[in-house]
Amino acid sequence: MVLDLLKKRRSIRKYEDRQVEQEKVDQLLEAALRSPSSRGRNPWEFVVTTDPEARRRIALAKEHGSAFLAEAPLVIAVVADPEKCDVWVEDCSIASIILQLTAESLGLSSCWSQIRMRDHNEEISAEQYLKELLDLPERYVVEAVIGIGYPGESKPGHPVESLDWDKIHINRFTQGRGLRRPC
Image (cartoon, rainbow, N blue to C red; front, top):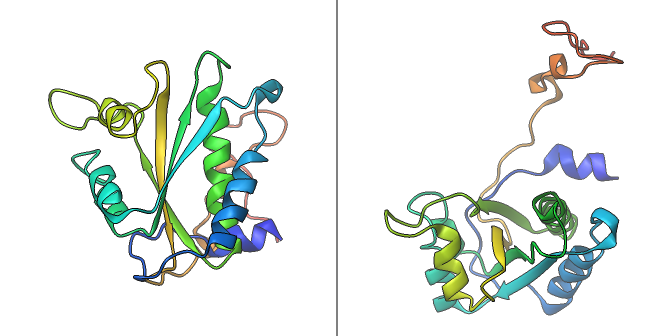
């Protein structure tokens, strides 16, 4: 059940020094390719990296928040051709969470590193850095990079008591009076 995956899934940034089996990589990629997209345009593409030196260079994409990618045995960049679809951001986001939930279902852990609208340094964006590094066509964009591997740390899922049920509104937005936790 998907809710069971969501109850235990956490962003994991430490991984075992262990490769992800090709069978699991294939399942992850099939899941990504099955991701829904607006009008079936499928603007996303995926750059899969397992080479340690390439992962190390990808991990340098941002000043903060991408270093963990160097240790992830599997790194998948979620990129898009924005000429195919005006909602490529949404489509890439859907594909990204499909990848993360599939990883969880396979006994793997993952963490998303936002690239779009982030800086590499004062001169270039994280996206431009990765476009050059990954040899992407000029029109392509990079939304995120996802690190995947066997978890090297354990975090409990968020307890139901921590969920903010006030964020749920029925029929209309009722500021300050959202749904109270169901029994």
